[in-house]
Amino acid sequence: MSEASIAELERIDWDFKAHRQTGLDQLHWFPASFIPQIPAILTAHLSEPGATVADPFCGSGTVLTEAAKLGRISVGIDNNPLAYLITKAKLTFLDPGYCNETLGKLKNSLDGGNLPSLVPSFPDQDRWFHPDTLQELGRIFFLISNDQDENMRRFLTVCFSAILKKCCTQRDHYTYVADNMFPREREALIYINARTVFLDHMEKAFRALRNFYDEVRIEGKDAKEVLSKCTVYQEDTGALSSVAENSVDLVVTSPPYANVTDYAKGNRLSFYWLQLGDFRVAQENEIGARWKRGRKGAIDDYLSDIQKCFTRIWHVMKENGYLCLVLGQTSSINNNRNLHEEVLTLLQSSIGFTLLSKSITRNIYGKRIRAVRGVEKEHIYILKK
Figure 1 (cartoon, rainbow, N blue to C red):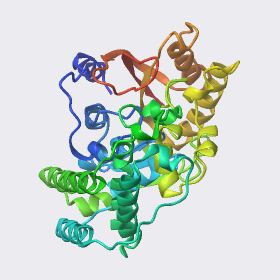
Figure 2 (cartoon, rainbow, N blue to C red):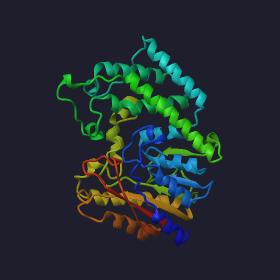
Figure 3 (tube, one colour):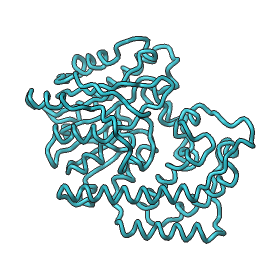
């Protein structure tokens, strides 16, 4: 990449102040997710059609869908089972006509009554949900669980997971779920019509899916073919055995911020309903989780994990491949250490990357990072192998 190209990226207004969630990023909320403009611009500038673009901390898969839209082969890795499920659902082609047919069948079945209610046993379920809402959710879950098409069942499951916070009494802020906050009195439980919430979300999700396919077609590509070349793996990035060495042209990623977000714990309702395993096991494997912030040596542990992960990332990248890194930091959490400089030093001195740009800064508007101590700015670093 020439200095002129770097300068062009540095001149972009990266704030995207007017951004609102649209398209597939509405499918399921996930903590600290990308806004799609960031990977879209970086992918377009730093790779060619047919190149392989990877996000080794893929979360809900925004990098992958934006890369696919541009005709790139995309690869995602995340050790969170819910992140894997969301991304897999986004990357699996569903015929739009079949989607409309499925939505009609769901409406008819839910209106017909006499459906069994399938509610898995999980802690404090009668405190998270009004009893009538809980039974309605159970009926929806029963229908989804009995869908015979694996790909559609996955997509419906992700949509069901997406409405759980909207249907629970503590639904306004994810830390209510993460931090075990409940209504003080049973009378405080709020009835929410789960059927209406689910069907509304399904209509929006299927519309977003159709729009995504249209955007791919506008780029002159077939959505089914493009998505067939995109893959997501549930794996620890520090191991990264699923991706071949020297196979990735571009990495666009935002690794977990140090001690800012609880990914598994914040989605505990989905872990309970979908039986994704004990969320406490998943959270133990998270890098820099918010709940670890009080541990002595938490930042040093975070840096050690980052070094392990990016050493593996280095090996799967092609020579002269680009690494785009989005980092945010709150000094109050990190004991006023310049964590960005420490990460950049580690990437360059210990691993071997060359820093091309460190002058791209963006202000965060809205509530992309929902945490007790918010992250107000992010920095985008461009490096080269």
